Image 1 (cartoon, rainbow over the protein chains, first blue to last red):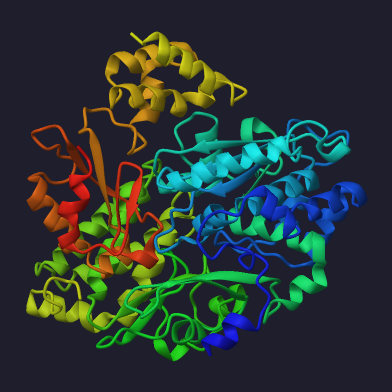
Image 2 (cartoon, rainbow over the protein chains, first blue to last red):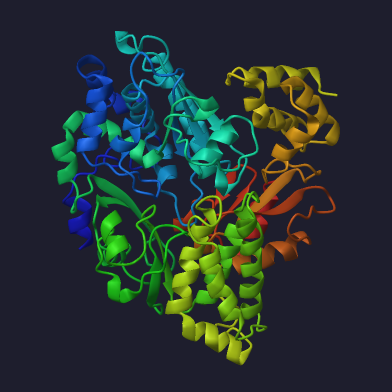
Length: 437
Length: 154
């Protein structure tokens, strides 16, 4: 299984990464065909043609929401009447619990992201681009900064890139913590030097973004796919996938599996193929009880649905969860599910920006109740309070998607692990001892 | 007051942005790099350079967990409390660190050497449990390794 998945397919994003884990430098990147897609776009394609190609490839945003990248770009005002400067931003604020795919892409193939950003900027006629990097990714920052200097020296950044008349600079902005900065409008406030709380939508950033100018915010993995689409075409890209969404996906598996890690596989690889293939199954003495499939803000999926393909539509329709970032964490049978949900809700409560009341006050309340159940002080009526919150904090009740995301693991846990909740409350203790395997 | 060097470095950082206030986080980081933290007086000084009020800048400084508005130790020990690390043994690691350092969250050792902080999932889930000391990442940690790791930071 592992051999088949590992060797049979093309791996445009990771195939040229170095085995020693060091970043691919500009010389090696160009020898592998790097910057040829940029050359092709600048020499032979209009910005509109690049947009159309990415749309035809059915590239869906890899930051979690899965919105069509080409469609997102198509809302940017184009041509001589459009407001300038326009901006393109790489959302490199990867902070979704369980997610580390973008770090791998930046640390090991930095020029792929840079080339993707330049082509994407060309497609929306952007004048300036930013990499918005999370504080914890210091190594990614050093590698990206060095690669930006190389790209500049090689003439791929700056004025009149490759003699095309297109100008672009990319600046690196390193944040100082805070999950909410990954929400695209909070990110814009952060970059403007404001307190990073989300903005109301509409207006959407494509028309009124950074400093009120047209702006596109794309995830790292999304941008990294763009050069490959431009080079090889939409049909090639769609053929990489096992479903209607184009391309490969960087999947990761963590938790008590034998080989936690990251793998680039066809979009639509099943949960089971990931778990039993490259992750090599559970460690001895542990059984998989469920997975959180795509980061902390996705619902648990039980083993009877492990044959679900990990693509956007299947994960929603069949598994009643979400693909999210495609970065899976396994809940094993020795780990307390209430403890796990408590850990997740504590994260969401701490990372709430505090702007709107339901999120600011609701999440800490949930944390106190979950802590009390875990520590043996739970009351039967606590279950109703937990359940009520999944309604109070659902989509469109709070100001942004932060608290609704926090409700996804909780509401599925209330159904799937009801017996565990009841037992904690009835026995006034955690049956998993310290709450941890 | 800002030192001449701080002022010069802040001006360099501001060149990356079209408006001064957009560079506020970088400016705060300059101060923190020189002083270890950002005192009230320097909040006011930096705000003046950026054309902001001190309160406005403090509202941003206090929003970010890695801008320190109180003195911290020479080294920051940040333990990942993401759920992958939690599954893989975060609690034991945390307890061992508390015992060794004699401080809990936000505390600084009496010798001013270490400050202990939580960090939200730091993206090393395949090497859980993980922690950072300053800018260095350590993964697949066991409690036995802690002493040896901390010894490297004087």
